[in-house]
Length: 450
Image (cartoon, rainbow, N blue to C red):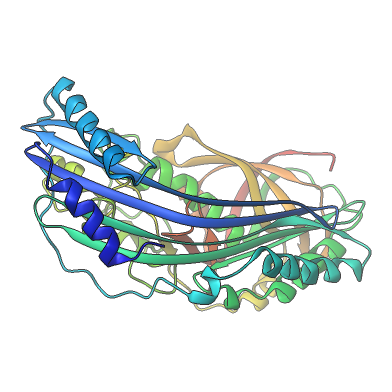
């Protein structure tokens, strides 16, 4: 880590030499370690110390972007000159709003020293505890344990000066027997919050309970979706519907439906980058303060996230959801999705099911089938169970589902008061925080032999 003072000084010196009308520099630096394990032994340790420095320069309405991973002053100046030349060659972008001015940011604790100092040996010791739980049942374990620290700084020629240190840790694990598997995961800013043994016990118990799975027929089933499964659905919906670009292109299931009730009133989904129950972060990648955005409020469509360019088109204000300069054309993106909690106790929800299926998580999801109707497809994995008369009766072989999120979530029967943080594509600046959900109807479209 370089630190706020030294980093700003180095970037300011380069910024002062820019000949562009406006100039922005985005610095993303990180140190990250990853320990992978399979068949109950560690097979890979990797560590990366790297940085990316983006330059976004503006000549009138022409915008250029270039990047480097070198902090040598000559390389920074060369990259800035490249971005100016790129801007010179670009067509004018009439929708470009210009760079933002200075703003105030909410103070958010995003850094934990213990997490930043979590060593490969520390990760190995955590994995040892995880594997020990699997050995109790003579199962094997596979998964990954990751920790990272870093800093993000954004400055521009209009006065933006944003800086934030960060840390994050996450772990996932799959316990495996000859006929079954069980999954658990967690993520946090603070590695001490990760209960490696408790998570391993959960994965082992799921694996044990789902041994010798039976086969059930696909069709319309009542389901309990645990947080990992709910998070995987929301991640796809975030990609195809919650951002400004699919909404503007009328590919989002929210397009043209703002103000309409689309799901059960028990369902509220929002993005809130300042809520420390998630992986909070106070600003986006153009230095705009994060704002809470309601996407579905008690089932009613409310809106999508915006960066400054999409906000200008939509005649609204940025919500603080710009992505990195090299991806600006993709529009805004939600980094901290939440589903509001309900009133049910998670450990009591199965007892309310006469006959149904409990899903631990999904994989191979695809949300591009019919995004305007929020149709998703995917496979169950690592813990799928038949529930009868309020009790788990047995593990079942995996099923494919194909269903509309809107249709299925109209049948919501209960939502748990407890929520879990599920790591997303970049856990250093966000994650998905979701409860367990009980649906009255969920459509499975195929079955497997495993």
